[in-house]
Amino acid sequence: MIRSLRGMNDTLEPEESARFSYFIETATRIAKNYGFRFIETPQLEETALFKRSVGESSDIVGKEMYQFTDKGDNDVCLRPEGTAGVVRAFVQNKYDRQETTQRLFYHGTMFRYERPQKGRLRQFHQFGCESFGEDSVLEDVSLILMVRDIFDALGINFTLKLNSLGDPNCMPQYRESLISFLQEHEAEICEDCERRKLTNPIRVLDCKNDKCQVVYKEAPKLMQNLCQSCDNDFKTLTGLLDEHSMKYEIDPHLVRGLDYYSKTAFEFISTEIGAQSAIAGGGRYDRLVEFLEGRPTPAIGFAIGIERLMELIQMPEVTREGYYVGAMDEDAISKAYTLGMKKRASDKVTIGYKARNLKAHLKAADKANARYCAILGENELNNATIWIKDLEKKTESEIPQKEF
Image 1 (cartoon, rainbow, N blue to C red):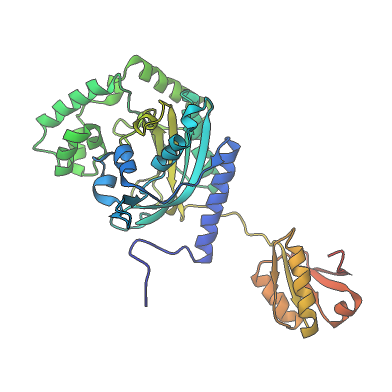
Image 2: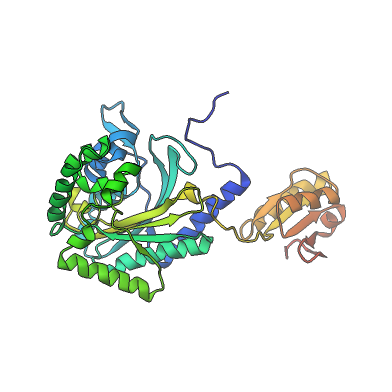
C-alpha cells in the first residue's frame, strides 16, 4: 500500500474537515470585515526569495526548506511561510508604486522539513494577513484585534505577548551590547546560539535551550534600549490595547523567528495544547519590501497555524439544512433528479439515486442532516406534486412541483 509521506496528513475525517472549513470561513469573514481581500500565491518559489527575506541565518532556510533544482536548472523550493510570497507579488505587480494601502489575506499549505509532532507537520496550513502602506500604530492595533476577534469567534483562549524590536536607529547599538554579553558568556551558550551570534545575534533570545534561557535572563533588554520614536510607538500601542480591553504581557525575549521584523512583534500563546505554544504571531516589517527591490513601504502582518488550533476550535451547534430528494418508484427517479438539480440553484440538496421505501429515504435524509425530506412516489408523479416532511418540526405537506 502506498501511504502518505511522514508529516503530510490527510484532512479527511468528517469532524476534522468540518473544523478546518469552519476556521477558514470564520477567519475569512473577519478579515473581510477589516477591509482585507484574498490573494493566492504559488506554492513553489525561487529559493532566493526566502534566503533574502526570511534570512539565511534562520532555521527555516538553514535546515527546514524543501529545496531542489527543477528540470530548467532553477533553484526552487516549496514555500515555508506565506509573507515572502505575498511581498514578492506586491512588488512584482507594482503595488509598491501605488499610494494606497493594500490589505491582503491568504490561506494555504506551507512546507518545512522538521520533526513531525502534534500540531507541527511537514505540510501544514496557515491563514495570514499582510497590510502594506500604513505606518500608523493604529494598523498594528487593528491586526492584533483582528486575531483576537478570530479566536473569540472560535472559542479559543489565549495570552498575547508583546515586544518592540526597535528600528535601524536603535537596533545597531543594542546589537553591539548583546554581542558583548554573548562573548562574555560564550562558554555557556549552545552551538546554535554561537552561530547566531555572528549572523543575527538578536535571535539567540528565541533559543529553546533551557540552559541558554537561564543565561539570557541577565542579557541586555531591547525595550530598555529603544530610541525615542520606537519607545513612543510602543507606549501608544499598549495604550490603545488597554482602551480596547486587550490584555497582554510584555516579553523582552520575544523576537519572532524571522529576520525581517522591526518595531512591533506579537505572539498569541495557548496553554491548552500541551506545552505553552504559539498559535499565531506577527509584527511589523517596514524594510522587507525594500529588501525585495520594491519601493520602501511600511508593512505589518500575522500568520495563524491552523493545525495547532484544530482541537481548540469550539464548533457551533449543528443545525439541519437543505433538502433530501428521493423517489419511491423507478419511474420517478428521473423526475426527482431533475427537481433536485433545479433546487440546487438556491439550496443545499442531496439526491437519492435509487428507488426506496419511505423509511429508507427518511433514514438517508437524517444521515445527510437535511432539514426537509422531499419524496416522489407514483401518486405524486401522476399529480405533479411532491411530498415534504420538515424533519425539525415533524410536519408533513404535499405541494405542487412548480412551487417546490
